Image 1 (cartoon, rainbow, N blue to C red):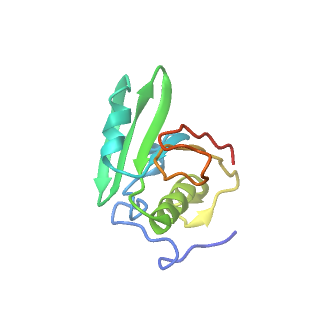
Image 2: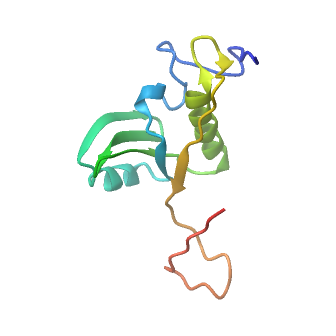
Length: 135
């Protein structure tokens, strides 16, 4: 079983993933990612209840219930480097035992939806068009 050294898996003093400041129990397995941290509250205001509100730098997280479904909304900030940090720390939260720093025997897949804005990628797609991708 692979062991992750302190330089490979950075944790805070509470043994949470460093950048997000989260423990596994703070996270739902259905996640909405947004870029701008102000969008987190715009989504979570529709939740029936909010159980977790955390923020560290541009990484803002709300976890709660929406119509009986537990959801987490997380902001990634700007750029692929920040998205990389979020995705790696989410994976670590569910697939690495943070106490032993070893990969869990049973791996977990998360359901992640990204909601955001982008310029038109093709000239035949007008600005303000809703685009849904599956991959």
